[in-house]
Length: 155
Image (cartoon, rainbow, N blue to C red; front, top):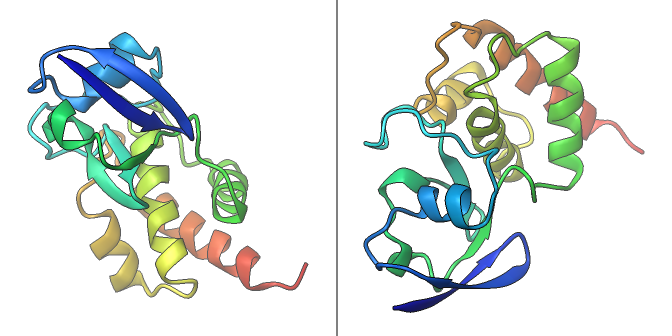
């Protein structure tokens, strides 16, 4: 079947089975490989993308369910929250192996778009679906606080 997806503000016509997970369409059909495969059961967060601005696990979303959504991958993520998080990620040496980082950042972007002054509890809740094999959770939390502080300063 033929499906139309809006990914990173571009329309794509995809010929595939409607049950194919969005993750594989993004990676194998559109060559957007920043979104990672981790577990395949929506438990690790490596495949996190935004559907209509909300973080979702692309490994568990069938292609046919994503056709009415605006999909944003790490490659298309932009805005002041993204810039602040990328700066803070580097400043706090968050990435180790880097595998989970796109999913972590996509979840953190959604958090900061909803809450510019998150508490530790807010961060822990928002990030709870993202696993880091290198256990950089304290750095992730510190980077999110730093990014929130950057966003709170006048330009």
